[in-house]
Length: 139
Image (cartoon, rainbow, N blue to C red):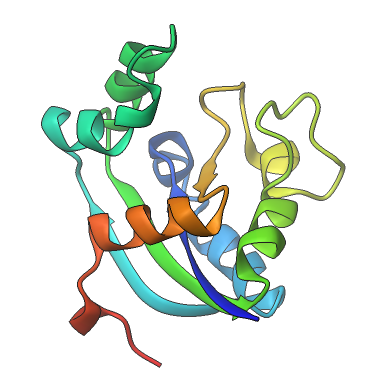
């Protein structure tokens, strides 16, 4: 089944000049870019995006981190795109991620783990429109 999912290249990965390498891996894995944008999140935007984690202890630090610099957001499409993107990302904690995954290769720690991805179809349905309108999605 063709799916659309959200990818975010997080601030530290953008700062370290890794966006191109990460996008190359995404496309190399057969996932199509339907939309792509460099954005600087405001505090309100970060808090709204991560609202599902509001009660978690890491919520405030995550929001602070996500407003610390620009991020690259992308809508990805392909057969089983959600699972394929999550596999390519690797485990949330880079120390636990499989060799060859983006988080293993580029992540620093559990928060600065280079990338974000939707974890389900329901999450993708909320996250993609957070950054992109229907007019932004091409292909």
